[in-house]
Length: 180
Image (cartoon, rainbow, N blue to C red; front, side, top):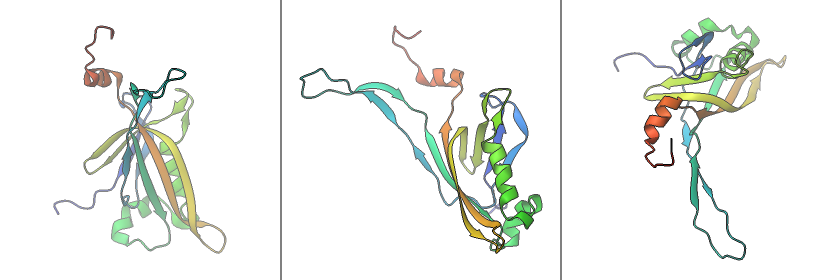
């Protein structure tokens, strides 16, 4: 093992070309995800003439890839200090996981008034480099102090992939005469 433990990092950008990083718009996870999953979907037109018995699906489009993660937030002290040092020095656990969740939501979810949309995101961890936007998030609180302060939470997040128009056009390599 050459370096130390590499933590997953999420960086937010104000533009779809991923050139303008948002100030304070980065988040390093407390615990690396246990796993992640990609979802790919192709849409077909299946219009069928009335009275016919079958149809051959006609290609319509490939939808953006989707990436799904579960992120753990824990302020119980169960995570060893050597694994939690950077995270616990950034967030005070006086409020349980509330401050860390607030920052996480500000990075991945906050609406930008100037562009009228949430931020563009780049997720990096090991060999994974994913560019896209948050499409869905659910936060479940799992453990509490006696005063009701949440000590553990799991954020399930889904992201939709984004490809810059120049790159998408080059990748498609459309060569039929009806494409301009």
